[in-house]
Image (tube, rainbow, N blue to C red; front, side, top):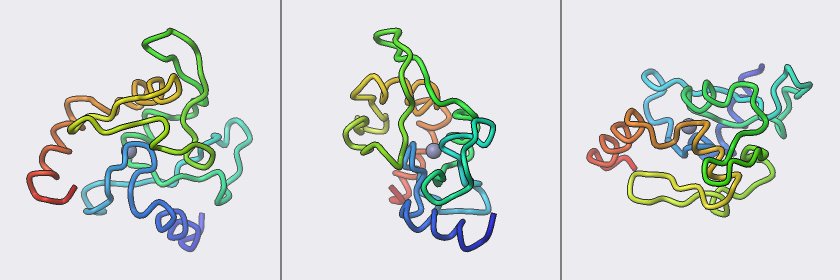
Length: 132
Ligand SMILES: [Zn+2]
């Protein structure tokens, strides 16, 4: 994919992971990806409206998934789509944690491990440095 497309996606995302909101402050240490919201495997194009700026962990955890399971209701639901869905409708900050507000939000937060120990430690460090 072109550098122009990469820059456009990053700029639109305000240089944050469009899933977990991690800022890409140190590109050499924290790899970010052009994530296909609808994976190429499922016919998703490499176009601006199908790409999201995602940290390596979100990109890896989402993989080619289009749906997930809400841990509260056990329902299979569509995953959060940054092009269609408003982050603040489906997620809320709870200190360093990201809480899912809807079935979609909970399924996405669970699948992408928004609140894993590793991520909480990273957020705590960034907060201590005044970077988030
Ligand atoms: Zn992320």
